[in-house]
Image (cartoon, rainbow, N blue to C red; front, side, top):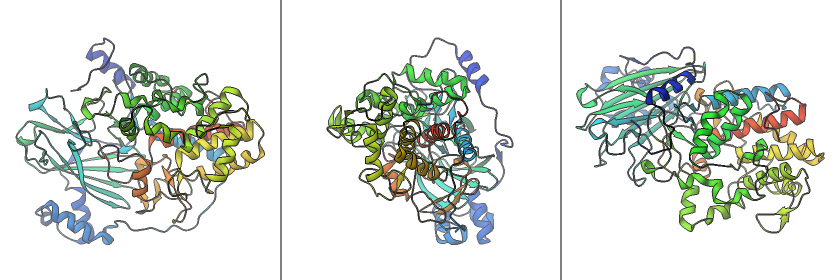
Length: 558
């Protein structure tokens, strides 16, 4: 059921399946099985809050149900701020740092996808659905997964057409096309989630209608929910609850900044075969170094400027054409490769193109390069070519960041609102200042490292000062989102109910590269793999140099 060409080893399907099965993580306790027979979540919510009998709601057209939700937003808790008292400023103690590292590791673990030979790191928690058209099984587009496409973004197989966001729920309308007429409705699905303060997430998948004539099956993740939709009486609704912050991970996976980061993390922890199956994917498709390698004291022998060449963005050679991608996609595990707008910039100008020019001015790459120079030469005053022109040193880069980029709670993004801090830039800054301050004795850097660490322990979803499984967003206030528990906020600002909150969605769409391909998730996405993996490593480095604690061991510390 998989459509791609790849250099897999010559193993039988049975052997690949056996290898995958023996390495699968046991399900979280209390997850349970899929259940049917209950009304859709959104109808239960409307009936409870508005007093309308469910049989009457079942008679309404989808548009009428959407209008009910929109007209009664306040009663349903849509976009309502919940003000929490106090804004504590927590110190980054050894115990707090280890707590945040443990939660970040648990978040990363639930985004891990297991295959028989290659493993995958997914981008974020999501609601990953898809269809498989058995009548067209040889057309090169099966399975058709939410957000995936053929030829151009105009021809997306499954798309989200409406969303409502509440403090403890999200409602989405999703529609698929099963052929090539792009009229959609094959099927039309309500994908609704309710979130509990106890860590439960309930997925309510209601297949409302099917307008096609082919033999089409419907999947949630790798689970077949309903086969041959045209032969079934619809609507049918399926419930599934994950507990303890569990989630369905997204279809989308990344190698650059994803599998490459987590390969190093799993080498440190030793689980998932020490990253062995992630490295199979990395090596088979020609990936070598990653710009985040210096955080782990990797790629020390590479050129001083290895961040600024095409090999650092090798995914652009493979994953920019939907189902024609050279990277694996399909089911078991459900996945397709993430596509970055880096590749768009590359195509517009040729290589190195405008993205390399931008990366040379990108605060993230300049900080990471300074860490690389420290690893390579062990000298904070070693002079090297500044990507902006002239020469610089790691210490000078730190002074530049302190004076021009530090906004009091993090490193902001070049050309964007300076009041918003970036997770990956601030995480990398902590490593640079920790090495300069605690390893090389720079008092100014030491003070910035301490201030930065105090901020970072307060920007993890579900950790103090946030309540468990909760965090705050500029658009929707305080939200309960157990799947994001342990993930680091992608960006943050001050001025909400808590000391830090997620910026508006419009800002995130602009800076987080989410407009580079059709969206797989229209709900709130406050965290992702890249930010959380760099967060984990930055806290490990600070914990080691500040408190002398090598956690969980001394492996991969610069």
